[in-house]
Length: 408
Ligand code: ASP
Ligand code: MG
Image 1 (tube, protein in one colour):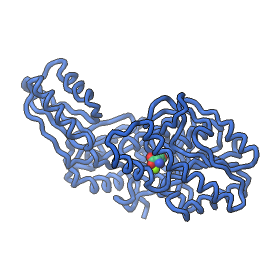
Image 2 (tube, protein in one colour):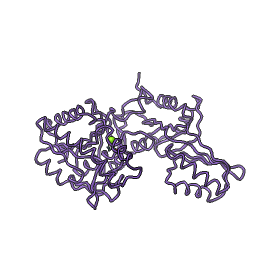
Image 3 (cartoon, protein in one colour):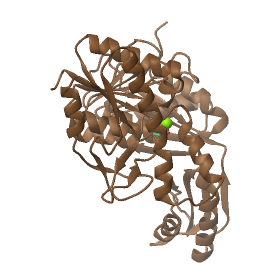
Image 4 (cartoon, rainbow, N blue to C red):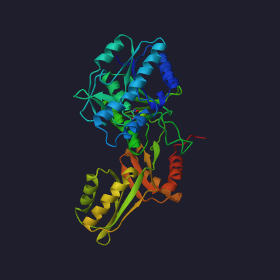
């Protein structure tokens, strides 16, 4: 079936109105005319999922997780049926199927279930009858035959997993941007669309705050080698292809610059400098379910040191409370926080084989009088915490000096 079958996923903004749904159907028509077989995964229309969450919150702050999944999964059912009708109206044979009918089996968890197996018998049957199959994204069925949702943004995962299970030629992700950019075009208008990017870079960018695709779906694609094409549903332009090895079209070591302004920094002062202290602090914090990101411990000259780390702003209150508790327990000093910070990062698989990239980054920031408060690195990225007010400027100068801008 390979090469004939394409999985297409239309995100919420691409099916946000009847007009957009009709557009998606027209696109499918053009593919059908070229002889492609199509499986189309849809998200809920626009902000439907948020609206459904809002409805439940008017009843309770702690809804039953099973009922919550029952509720949230309805959004995709609406869009899938409407798209199937639009396809039929164009004279195409089409059918919509739920996660259960599509054979998407999930683990017995609600709200963020993983897919454990796909048995797409029904889909294959309908494809044999030359139908376009429209599948509700974001949902599977668990061992109790209850609907389980796959985590926010989970339609991406549905699409990638189906592309793998059906051995599709490619998984196209339709969204409201033209693809993945060298940086956010709203911050730097000279940002360029990237033609090809690796799974690793994409994962790194997702973890650093780029929100184009659900990170779990990229992990899945990497594991099973599913090629993804992220593109706009509003035009016919090619977008960005995500794959294992990107062709290095240009000799660029750095592929993208990202900015994340959703973190805050906590500093615990005068932490006793002896074994087991960091373990105590971070155990307390993780017990609260707070995710700690960057950690920096100052070199101690006396017998105490300062310890700084970042957490997401949403978890700041909880993190502060536990940090103060932990500081008390170990006899450390005051606990400060700063939520006016930004994380600017450079990402690129080329960094694996090039040296001097970190020093160049620091130099560029220094030349622009931007103070670096914390640094962290991975194999393919370098991040600096700076003051929030310099975030935009940092992105622009790094983007420029690493040669990512549109040549003018
Ligand atoms: N509708 C779900 C959400 O908004 C799933 C998705 O859009 O992928 O998270
Ligand atoms: Mg959505």
